Amino acid sequence: MIRSLARRCFLTANTLRYRIEFRIVAELVSQIPGGKLGSKVLDAGAGSGEMSLRLMRAGLCDALIGVEPMEANFRLLRQNYAGKAHCAVHQADLASIPVASGSVDAVISTQVFEHIEDDQAAAAEVARVIRSGGYALISTPHPPEVFPNDGHVRPGYTVEEMAALFAPVGLQLLDHRLFFTLPTLQRLMRALHLGAIGRLAPIGWADCEKGLSQAEIAAQQPYGIACLFQKI
Image (cartoon, rainbow, N blue to C red; front, top):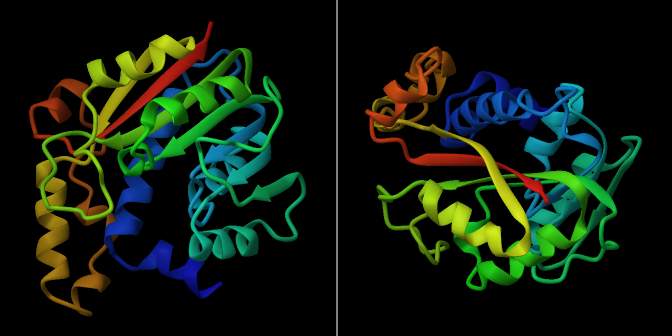
């Protein structure tokens, strides 16, 4: 309850990212016939499950499987999925996803692949579990990375690098979006430097890219990229 309230009311790096990234994810899902990812969606590297639960609440999927390898994140994921119909969780690495081949309509994975050393193995597993004709929606940082991050094994991917990673495993790039621009980041940093007072700044004030075209976003040094793929 408290965490959910904080995500709606307080400006932090996470609340701002979820606001912007979910908007981008929803834009990409709107390109799919029927306007939803499918009935059963697997969240690969689900973290706390925040993004996938937003998808379900928005009616963009009907059932969720959350897969998360890290113990602390998995505890949160299990807690957040608990008591919700059609939600299952697995603690597992993305190089060995414990679900049957072709058993899900879509996979989402947000801000995960930059952490994975063997991204080719993870990409192959993502493709394996998706049914023929199903979808994958993958987001990562977009280089250059602004701050060093010890948890990242690479600074992110360009759209060309994303397409090259997933094409060999049978996932065709359909569309992509850039997001999280330098002006947005600068406003976030300005607020965070004010400490507790800065957290009270409206989240919408820090979102400098709502309503901008992709060309306008691309011109403002975006630090995020989301790609929609289809299994061929």
